[in-house]
Length: 72
Image (cartoon, rainbow, N blue to C red):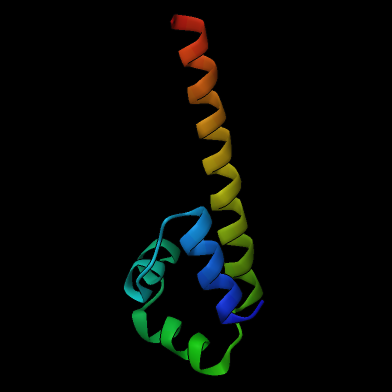
C-alpha cells in the first residue's frame, strides 16, 4: 500500500487526518509515519491493522444501528 492510499483510507473511513494521529492510532512513532511517507510505502502489518480498525468500526456502527431499531 502506498502512503497516499493510507492517507485516503484514514481520512475517508476513519476520520484521521494528521500524521501524528495516524501514528497514535497505529501505536508507532511520528517518525515512523514520516518515513513511510518519504518511502511512499506502508509496512504490511500496519495495512492489516488499518483494515481491522475499519472493519471493527463498521461492526460497531452496524451494531449501534441495530440497537437503535430495537429500542425505538
